[in-house]
Length: 275
Image (cartoon, rainbow, N blue to C red):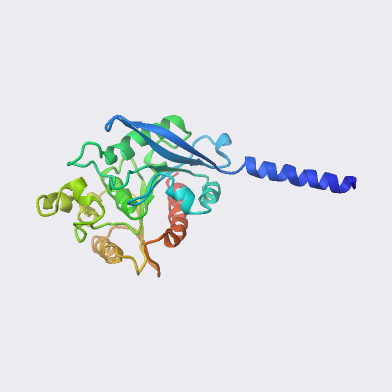
């Protein structure tokens, strides 16, 4: 065989191996919630430059109702490439089928506000080379996870410096019989104050001095479009800085696979401006 061809073939193989070695790395880790006394899985994606990095920002990426910790890496293709592009760590925790990322007053086995905002953040900061400050920490998600990200960011502004929502259930009150919410909060007719307190649109008063950077995205054919549009209008009325994105699209992975690109660019710009 031609020696020049052999050398070229060898160099191509070597280059492919280097590219593979330098790609983002995805791990599934087992964390422990002391609040719920159970182990919970999470996906952690680190960029290709992780070994050389001193400290990297983290984006917590939440799944929707009926999903799990593996949804984002299996259904949103190219997420690993965005991790490399922005040199960021992404953490996808398991929020159970219908936790809504709340500390449920009805069920002690659903205390996911504490888990994500405190226990998981502590675990990631201990195990990975992270920026251990809200300037290097953001949270976003889809549907139930979009609501969860906004809820956690508004209630824990000392933890998350930026937050986003993709097709988020940012006002739960129009949906009293859907998606396990009554099992987490109790029924709307018996506990209306709980539903009022857990609606993002009713939490805007928490955004006062130095609020988190916020981005909201929802498709025009989404059943959550009207509540997202109303949230945007309420934020405009209160002069709360935020980005609001809408375009044709429904409540599906085709939309979210597109939306995550805007979310991560927004988070990247936040991290760059915060340091």
